[in-house]
Every structure is written in structure tokens, then in C-alpha cells.
Image 1 (cartoon, rainbow, N blue to C red):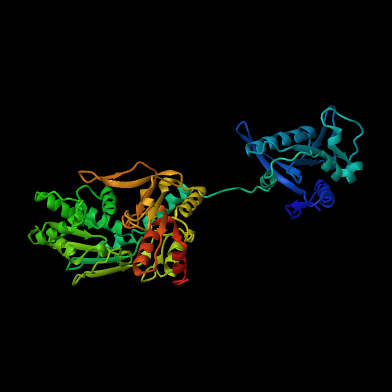
Image 2: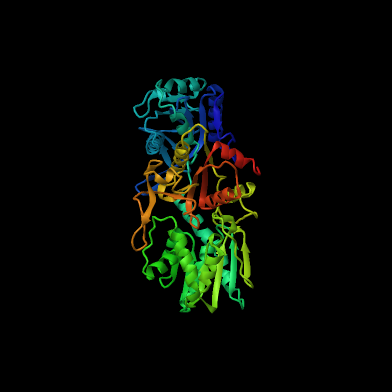
Length: 545
């Protein structure tokens, strides 16, 4: 028995012609094997010379290999004209040429299927006249393509004999079926989705920037402990913009150079955006020193000199923002405070969940403490995984409009030399899903000294964009590539639509490992995947799951 589509019978009032079409449909359903599909009452539409036309196909039979038979049923009264068979619809003057109607349907369908990349499908037609006998042959329509009242019991045999014996490509049948079933193949437009998520997340994350500046405190000291994706960067920009408008002198200091470079592009030109170690270097160079960066102890000496010299700093700042405070030593913060006016405002922003360096925590007496565990950046399912694995001391509240997917996990076996095979598999799936290299950041779990990925010139079929060095005036120099490759240490404070945290490998899951995983996973705005060793994956999944 053939499969009928749709399975729901015709509804509403039926005329005599409808009943006869149903009779023919029943004959096909009972007489054709179950490898055949029969569609009935299919609406169609086409554009001709700028005008949209509509019609309906009575019956369409699809053979087991994907060939098509259009069946036009003309029941009831038929007019025998001088040169054509016609049928009257709606009254005088509305006669339609049956042969012309069938040819039009055939040509329209041929074009539509060609446009749908189905040009090799055989399409035949059959005219069924259940209430008439055909007594003679005519030029306009082949007699062998007409089934009259006396031949109805042979309808199914006629249909099967009419199909050619050759078979199209193996996947054509499915595509033909989907075509007549009106199965729209749609996928999310990645670029549109990313843009929408970014815009809405930015809007939602503006909460800190909206209400925190409204908090007044006689001490003018504010500590903002906020999780990843909560809007700390937006808060910093709002504070800096307001200070510049008020003609106040302000400075933003963070730990991570890439974060400083990123914020410098967004902040007003009058703002001093820097890292603590840049300040130390600037001081050394003003004092006539030429730091030898090949010396491993050069930074510790510059820091020591800066802290010692801070007692003589001029108190010139109306606003000081210390970002990534979890990575600052208490002495560094105290040295920076020497630059703040007695009436100046201090905002200390950080997140202990992103502490990647072993630092002593510092506290500010009489400061207003503001805490926020709302994450507006990371997809909901990423946050759920973070909480399930206990990667944050306190549960993170998912506030993103994007549900997303649970991070895909790709593993490499103990005997493998490296994780590149698993990483290539991960990137291949990302490309298949429609993402472009400029929308993806590959983040190594390790630093430059121990990472293999950070030294690769090509990855996932694309040239990599890797940090090279800073030039003489402090500008970051990058290799020429499309796919960003960075370490989890340098990429802290930044984000990308898609993040792949790779080279994840640890002997024992420590608190520091949890924080590195947390930092890596919270960089993704739309998607975050993990490439991890099998041993580490087992440890990770047994922590809380």
C-alpha cells in the first residue's frame, strides 16, 4: 500500500469532482506498493514576468528511485471543443484548456526542480478522466498518457509502466520527497545570530554601568567583585567617560596587556589606559634606565623600584580604576593609591574566580563592597556546566539571552604525541556549523613556553594570528593570519563568539586548574568547546557530575 501525504483527508464541503479525486487517490493507495509515495492537493506558486501565479496539483506519485508522475484528474462535465478538451470553472467564459493546464504545470514543476538542483529527475504526466471514455487519439495529448473511465482498474499498472527504469543518484529520492513535502532546509545564519547575541548581551550587561556610578560614599572607595561576563568592562568605560566629561584626570590600570590594548581602543583618548608593569617600565625609562628584558629578574626589579618610588608620586588623579585586582600584589595597589587625590575616587574591580597567579589578597578599609554573580556573556548551558563542575566558588547566575549548547568535549588518548588530532576534529565541526575563523579564538591551557599550539603557523586549515612581540613604542605585533591563537593567561578579560579551550591537561584537578577552566570557558559569547586529555576529562567529570 502506497504512503499518502498528507494523511488527513480533504476537509470541508466536497463537490463531485473532489469525490472523484478521492476515488482515484484511493485506487493509488491500494494498488501501488509501499515503496511509492502519493501526494494530493498540493498548492504551488511561481513567478512569471514579475507576477505571482498560484495553482494546485491534484496528485503526485514518487517512484522508489525518485521519478515523478503528475496526475491531473478531470471529473464531471468536460467540454469537447474544436481543438481541445476544456473544463468550465465558475461560469460562462471561464473555460480552461485541459492540455494547456497540464503542460503549464509540467513546465513550472520542471523549472522549480531545476532551480532546486534536481534537474535530472524524470517528470511524466497522466490525465485521468474517471467519467469519460476516450474514443480517438489526438495530437495535443498522448493517448497512452490518458486513463479514462474504462481503464481505471489499470491505473496503478499504467503509472508503474510509465516510470523509466534508470535510477538517479542515491540521495535524489529523499530530496524529491522533501521538495514536495515542503520541507524547508533552514539553518541559523551564524553572523546574524552572533550579532544579535552580542547586542543583547551588551545591553543586559550594562546594569553595573547604570547603577554602580550612582552609589555615593564619603570614602570614595569601591570594591567591585563581579564574575566573568557581568559587565565590568562596561562599568569601567562608563566611569572613564563620565570623568572625562567632567574634565577630571583619570587612569585605568589592569594586569593583562591584551586587555589594556583592547580597552584603550574603546576609552576616550584623554584616558591613561595601561598595565601595572607598563607603569613600572615607563618609570624606569624616565629615570634613564634601559631594561634588559632578556634578564628574568628585570620585571621584579622594575616593580620594586616603582613601589619604592611611589612615596614621592604626585597625587594628581581624580579617578583610578584597578581592574583584574585578583592578580595584583597588595604593594602594587598601595603604590597606585599614592597617585590618587585625597578627594579622588577608587574603583577596584576583580574576580577571585579568575585568579591565575598566586597573589595575596588585599582589602580596603571603609570601602563599599559590590558583588555580582550574574553572567550576561556566556551561553546558559556553558554556565550550567561551570556550576555542575564546581569551577566557581559560588554558583554563577546565567543571564545571557542565548541558551547555546553544553560545551563539546574532544579528547586525546594517552599514547598520542599531542592533542592536535582532537583539536583539528573540533575545528572541523565548527567550520561545518558555519563559523568563520575570525569568529573563533583557540585558547591554550598553557603558556608560550609549554604550548605547542601557540607556535603553529597553521591550524584547522587556516593561518594563525599569534602575538609576536611589542615594538619599540609598545604596539603589539601579530602574525598575519585569520584564526586567533592565544594563551588562557593573555586572553583573560577578552571574549570571542566561539572559544576553543585546548591542550587541557593536568595530573590532579587543583583550584588553579578550576580557575583556568573557568576563565577559558567564560570567554565564549556563543559557544565554548574543550579539547582535553582523556585522563583529565575523567578527573573533571568525576568532580561533581
